[in-house]
Amino acid sequence: MRDNYMSSFINDTREYDGVLRKKGLNYITQYETPILTHLQDEDYPLLTFISHIWKTGDKFYKLADQYYNNSTLWWVIAWINKKPTESHVKIGETIYITVSLEQTMALIDYTY
Image (tube, rainbow, N blue to C red; front, side, top):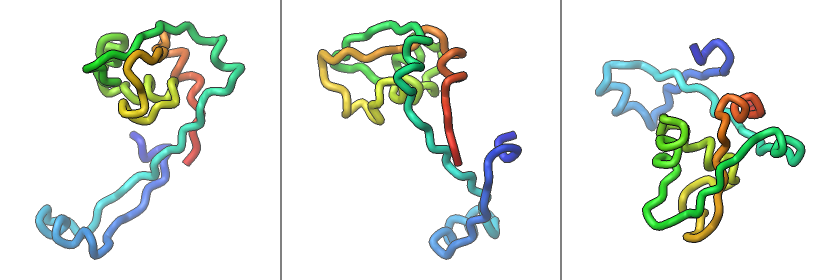
């Protein structure tokens, strides 16, 4: 499915020789990583947020599971807050979680 809209390339570089041989492959197909741009200032009023005070033990994946019922959507919370990892969030800091995942996803702008 994703190869319908993402460009891909064949990776047969020597660095992968051992791995490829072990798996009985001559090459692997890799896909370009999309580059996400952050929301524009005018996009934020279009969304409703829940505020969350960051505490010891918090993880983006746990919050994504709690609010979106899907821990793999941790990156949405990180993206909205412009915090690439949990280590960028300080204890006591307020982070924001969008209420409507559908509205949030509609605002995502990415390029390859």
